[in-house]
Image 1 (cartoon, helix red, strand yellow):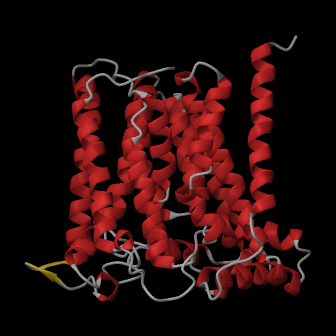
Image 2: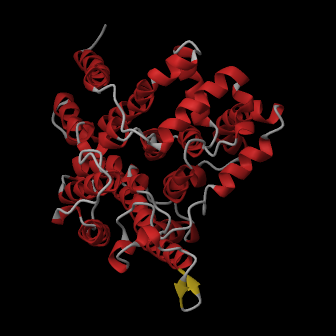
Length: 419
């Protein structure tokens, strides 16, 4: 017998499917001209179809492996015809869109306990899914950051639910899409500590790690058989430090320090330290500040031989919001879109805790930054002259967001926990 609640859940799942197809229907079949990444998607898809997925790294690509599988699927759906791949390239947005809607579904799962009805929880997710700061990256700009964001969020979700095997599997998929997912490893580790400590055994460790190891081997196997495994590893290693400028379009800390951070080499510096090193040290410092309260409580419990206290969902979402902000705000070589994952986590935190101001601030700052850097709505290459689009103003908005989140982290004693 199907209960009323079960029927409700099924209708809401259909609602997320409807959102996906609504976006498909209204997404314009156009793309900003001259975008480097869009050209890459075309040439890589064509090469993969004609020469085999396993040989793509012989073409000199610079992306982790998992997205090439998605490009292969796209090429197959286009029939492998070069003209179809070129003309239909805007359809590739639907792949990222699919994962963005899945991210919205898991957001619903995590916040539904905070609402009186499932319908209210579902409708609240529209506050995120139809936020221009969330959909601009893919629908307008044609980027794929929504995919690794989805997997990172799923990893945190299952860590909160104390299912380390699925959590680590989702993290593995995120890392195979974008190396930026590394920033979530400390949080996911801390969230899984309760389960790891309480149920530690070789058998459980193998059970939790095996799915991730199997999936990782399967992802890399074609490239290993083609003799390109070391090339894949080198692509991942060199993805850090590839662009040696203080900023690649990010209106972060460096926009407050330099008038033209996009033209300043980050190898320069002061006091014997390069700007790159200074930024990284600030990132480490603020990551430590963010993680310390949680880490110290867990460490103290282990030292006292007590079962570590469970990290509240509210605190997990708060930390998940702060980490991508400090990664983006202090490091050099940042693109405007590298803070994208903070939007989904900030939205989830806002709905869960009912603290909406940080979400509004980060959404505003991110939209102003990504549009200010891309200038798609403006339609030309000249910088915005409007006051609110100025890099130093946007940088201050980011800073206010970070400060407000850290204040909440250190002043809120009792965190909400609905499941």
